[in-house]
Image (tube, rainbow, N blue to C red; front, side, top):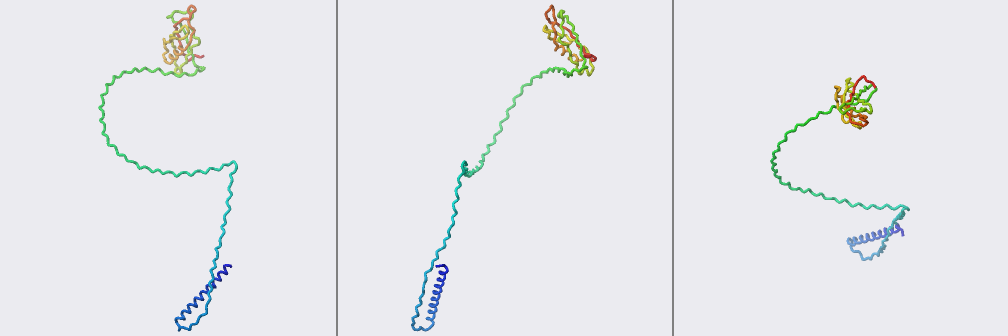
Length: 253
């Protein structure tokens, strides 16, 4: 049976029930208002009660999606490890600062009585030595630089040697720049003590030129010179000689 047929049957049954009830109500009212009619048995009315048709609910089929295929890992590739969840940070409760009681003020210690200082020693006068004269710059030799003359003469204090000493190389003191600029000239005589090996043991200025820069240049050159020793009876001996160094501006090499 279709749903439309079931509903029409229900409507008919309801109409029959409504009609039967209406007739019963009218009959009851007429019975109370009018004289009792003669007892007439009414025709029996048949009421058909139809059972209710239960329509089963329409079940909707739920569509279940097919399960997704599991992906197989590619050969040679390992699955990445799942990182473990980090634990939640533990909140540390800040401790309330504890106020310490202030220490009682300490009484200041008494200052020690200063001991008397010992008497200062008497100052000793310092001896101040005179500084050496500044060394004059040594200019490079030029073609027009004058060359001083050196002359040696034996000193008779040690006796006369058979062969007097002689410089192995010419003694050429440098003409000081200051003397050339000031056009100073002069002769410097030095007393030289020569050892049997031809070395200068001692050299002093006997007579200066009147200019310290010329005297210093002559003495420096004589002390650095090397000599052939004096010979007496064929043997080298010590001998003192005097050397004169002359500085002339018009001399040429």
